[in-house]
Each structure stands twice: as structure tokens, then as C-alpha cells.
Amino acid sequence: MKNYDVAIVGAGFAGLYALHKLRSLGFSVHVFETGDGVGGTWYWNRYPGARCDVNSLEYSYQFSAALQQEWSWSEKYAPQPEILDYANHVADRFELRKDIQFNTRVIALLFDAKQGTWLGETEDGNKFSAQFCVMATGCLSKENVPSFDGLEDFAGTVLHTGKWPHSHVNLQGKNVGIIGTGSSAIQAIPLLAEQATALTVFQRTASFSIPAHNAAMDKEHERFIKDNYPQFRARNSQRYAALDNHPSQVSALELEVAARTAIYEARWEDGGLPFLASFNDLGSNLEANQTAVDFVNAKIREIVKDPAIAERLCPKTVLGCKRLCVDTDYYQTFNRDNVTLVDVSAAPIEKITAQGLRTHQKDYSFDTLILATGFDAMTGALLAIDIQGRNGVTLKEKWQDGPTNFLGLTVNGFPNLFTIAGPGSPSVLANMIVAIEQHVDWVAELLTHLAANRQRTVEASATAEREWVELVNEIASHTLFPTGCNSWYIGANIPGKPRIFMPFLGYPAYVDKCNAITAAGYPGFELS
Ligand code: FAD
Ligand code: N01
Image 1 (cartoon, rainbow, N blue to C red):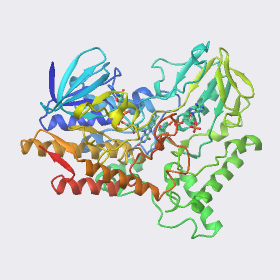
Image 2 (cartoon, rainbow, N blue to C red):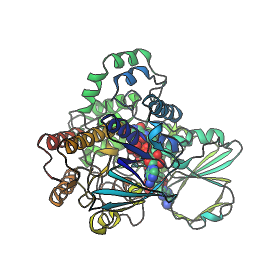
Image 3 (spheres, rainbow, N blue to C red):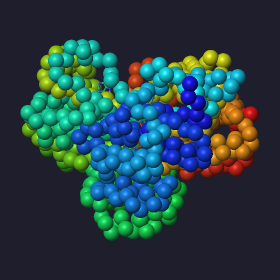
Image 4 (tube, rainbow, N blue to C red):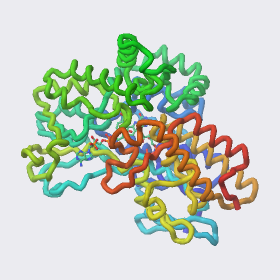
């Protein structure tokens, strides 16, 4: 049986950086990856239009100044193939592949308390052991396929945006149905509509989307950022979501309507996620939030020609409570003759039929069905592995009422196991590459500390864990996130999943807490 200091599960941006960092500190490290290549999200999500919605100059690693200087992004928001190229470039440049085992799914991890090590098993029946496990399994990697009646009877092709085929999918001349109108669908729909003969969009909840205004990379801007990368990164890391989002210090309710609208108008013109930072209380004050809702809905009514369709596209929820979407011509697409919008909240999907789909009202037919139905987010990929900690307790049992942990990184009863960008950390509410690097660096420092002090195990205490969960909930309770909508942040997209707001809100405050714990010699952890 192979033994490693550190086993990493997943070769997305988290696994790649963890491998590089821990190996460079002298640990023996091995990565297991289900796919046959690196890149995680960007390896799996190959649907038309897939791209980042964090500016490319920010949605990239900062651990290597040379890498930052040598890589060039072609667009403001890089498309999926280019981000995948980047992940491959990183893997080659830092010689990572030799320690990555592809086509290998980890199915079980068992903590051996006597030895203080983890025993792992892969789908092909092989076993390994490792002193530490770094779970880099991804927050948005376990696709959600709703249990529609009759799905297996569909005579045509079924595709999921999160597991898109690697070969070209030709939709020319096809009659396509798509279920879902979240970020993935909103990116895909304009391009699907251009290719397909007919496109029927099944919408359960309308989403807010802000135009990307994507463009070729402004070379002067790129030069400026590259000349000032450390300062640019340092400034962004002090911001709420670790993003260059120009946060406003003003309440939406402080301004007269005209002045407020002018600010929304400017943010809409700039495009993208910074729209959420137009005012400082959109995430916490319902009345303030309603001003943003009204602005975006007015835009939708302006763009979409048919008033009935426009009304269907206007979200009725809190803006930003579900993840804000960013698009190129999403609302405009509903002006096309070959696109139909079906509201499946009023008349839910009853079943998938051989020819298409039946709602409570009507039958629809198509030959290709696209599920843009998202992910079992944040906990799905972790709980898909049979992880058994101390005394035979499984993570599934431990998290049956929702995830509990300390710092979003470590779980009481599961020593030496780290969840990168786990629930209870800023994770999906931050620029994720920044959040990932911060987590990996923190773990690396802890493992170095253990080695220097001849200690073998580290475990979050039950008290630290309880207090952390209380803190995460307390912070969230001052915002509109937990109650403002049915989001995947609270597990509401998966039937039966416990409803708990999972991320830690506030990137810089979170980092300060992690750093304070390191500086104080790891209070809240038992080192032995
Ligand atoms: P992933 O990239 O999800 O990688 C996890 C890897 O673990 C996968 O390759 C998976 O195959 C592997 N794995 C899982 N379980 C096992 C197992 N049991 N055994 C072996 N291997 C396993 N974030 C942003 O900040 N900005 C963006 O613009 C942005 N855009 C996104 C667009 C899309 C379409 C999606 C889906 C997500 C986006 N995200 C974005 C979030 C994105 O997931 C993260 O930015 C980041 O790529 C996550 O990296 P990761 O390594 O943590 O996880
Ligand atoms: O998934 P989603 P996604 N019947 O969960 C619908 C990141 N990302 O893949 O809202 C009918 O957002 C569901 O309806 P409802 C980003 O973090 C980023 O689009 O539950 N409909 C919803 O409309 C994002 O948030 C980018 O009522 C059903 C849709 O499916 C996350 O990944 C691009 C249904 C799922 O939307 C997930 O995005 C892509 C059912 N039974 C992804 N079940 C960028 O732009 C689900 N739906 C960077």
C-alpha cells in the first residue's frame, strides 16, 4: 500500500496549488482526480458560453509572480477553454502531473486513530494511506440531476452543463429544451439560441443578471495591472469578496431617486458582479435591495419587447440572495423568434416524456434536453465520499443537520483532514482562487508547525467548532441571505438537504481570524 504525507483529492485550482505548495515544503504528496485532466470546474463545464465572471486579471493565481507576468488573458472575462489552458500550463510549468493520478475517484477515507493516519480507497479497489488529507473536491463539482419522472425514457440526448461532453456538440438544426435559468443557463442560452432551430427555456425562478460587457483584453490596462500586481492583489484582498468591486460606503436609501439611479446606471454600464457593491446595504436592508430590484427589472422591461415575457423574466426575489448572474445578451435572446420561455413555477414539470417534457399544463417536444440544474453545492462532493473519522462516525452522520466545522477547514472528530474552500469559509462568496490560495497557505503553515514540533495530529476542538458555527450563523443573520430566497447557499436546491446558510460572509475579516489563530499557536485545535 502506498503511503504519503499528504493525499489531495481533486486537481482543480485548489488541488493543483496544494500539490505545488506542500511538495515544495518537502512533503510527499499525491493527488487523486476523477477526470482525465486538470482544471476541475474548467475541465467539466464545457457548455457553450462558459467563462469566468471575475475579471481574468483577478481570476488567476498570485502565488508565483513569474506566472502572473508570463500569462496573458485574451478577454476581460476568459472563456472556459482558455482557463483550462491556464490550468494545464500551471500543471506543466510546476511539473505537477507526475504526482497526479487521473481517472481515479476516491470513494472512502477512514481515520486510523492508533496510527494517526487516513486509509483511503479508490473506485478501482486500490488502497493508500496518508497522514493528512486535503479535500480539494470543489464546491460546485457534484452535478445536480433532479429526479424527474421518466428521465430515462427520453428518446433524445440529455446533457448536463456541469458534465458537458468533451467532443463537439452540434446543435445546428436541433430542437433544444433547457431546464434551469441560473448562471450556467444564462451563459449558454444566447449561444444555444444561435445554434438551435428552436430553444425552449424552462424557468422555475427568474434570475437577476447584469451585462458582462465582455471585451478583448485592454492591453494598456493589462500592462498597468502587471506593473502593479502586488498592490492590486493586496488592495483586493481587503475587500468584502476579495474582488476589485469598488465598494460603495453609501446606503441606497440616502440618495434621491435620480442620484441613486445614476449610480446603478453607471454600474450597469461597467457590468458584472461589482453591481452588487453599488451601495453598502443591498445585502442587509430589504428596502435598499428593492431599489436594485426595481432598477434591474426596469432594464429587463426595456430590453425584452414582449411585455408578458419581460414580466416572466423579472425576478421577484432579493437581488444577490441567489448568486448574481453575469451575461452577454441573455435578456435580448428572448426577443428571438426561435426562443420560448416557459414558466414552470406556476405549472411544474410533471415528467420527462420520450419526446420531451410534460408540465401540469402542456406537452413540449424537443430532441436535446439540457439540464442546467446546478450542483449539490459545498457539501455534495465531500459527502459522496465515505469519510469515517474517530470512533467510526461518518461525515454524513456528523453533518446530517448541516455542515459544522472550525474555520470552514477542519472538523472535530476528523483529525488531519482539511476542506479547502469548505462550508463555513468565504469560499463561493469570494474570488475563489484567492480564497483557495489563502486556505492552502494556512494549511501549509500548520503542517510545517506540526513537523517542526514533532506532532502528528491536529484536530479542531468541539468547543471551537460550536463557536465557529454560531459565528457563521450570527453574521449571516444580519443579512438577507438566509431568508431572502431559496438558494443553493442554503441547500434549498436539493430536496431533503438541511437548510443552513453555508458560507462565511466577509473575506478580509475571515483571513484576519485565520491569521490570528496561527499567530497565537493554534487555539481551538488539539495538537498531539
Ligand atoms: P473544482 O474546480 O471543482 O475541482 C474539484 C476536482 O475534484 C474536480 O476535478 C473533481 O473531478 C475532483 N473530485 C471531486 N471528488 C473527487 C473524488 N471523490 N475523487 C477524485 N477526484 C474528485 N469562481 C470564481 O471565483 N469566479 C468565477 O468566475 C467562477 N466561475 C465559475 C463558472 C462555473 C461554470 C462554475 C461551475 C464555477 C465557477 N466558479 C467561479 C467557482 C469555481 O468552482 C472555482 O472558482 C474553482 O474553479 C474551484 O476550484 P476547486 O479546485 O476548489 O474545485
Ligand atoms: O446552477 P444554479 P448553475 N425543476 O443552481 C433550476 C457558478 N457558476 O449551474 O432557482 C426546474 O444556479 C433552478 O431553479 P430554482 C455560480 O456560483 C458561475 O447555473 O431552483 N428547475 C435554477 O434555475 C453559480 O451560482 C458561472 O427554482 C430546476 C437552475 O436549475 C453556480 O455555479 C457560470 C430544477 C440551477 O441554477 C451554479 O450555477 C456558471 C427542477 N427540478 C456557474 N432543479 C459564471 O458566470 C433545478 N432547477 C462565472
